[in-house]
Image: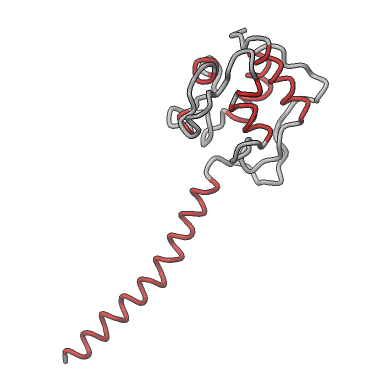
Length: 156
């Protein structure tokens, strides 16, 4: 009798492993995708490269709101990396703020785009490149954001 009970327990454990392993793989895949609400083949929503982003309000309207401040990314109180990029919150969450994920960098260093994590992440110099699982922003758009930073990263 004990032999049959032991065999039954072993079968139950084997069947649980067959169920739980794929379940955990699916959960990990969902967590890895995390921030992306779009398919990776979707282009980032960006203005044409000839549209200058001279002010934070331009960057907010044309980049952050459309591309970053999404519900599972940087658009809610429980935002990724504790970075909220919604209108009225981006400046306080970016300028002279130490990164949680990369503590050796500030998110935006006024007058120094080359030391600003925002530019490094947009250019793919630091992983993960943003926007996550989407096409990169146009280099001219990133250069325009860098220029805003180099001109003092004003709250304008």
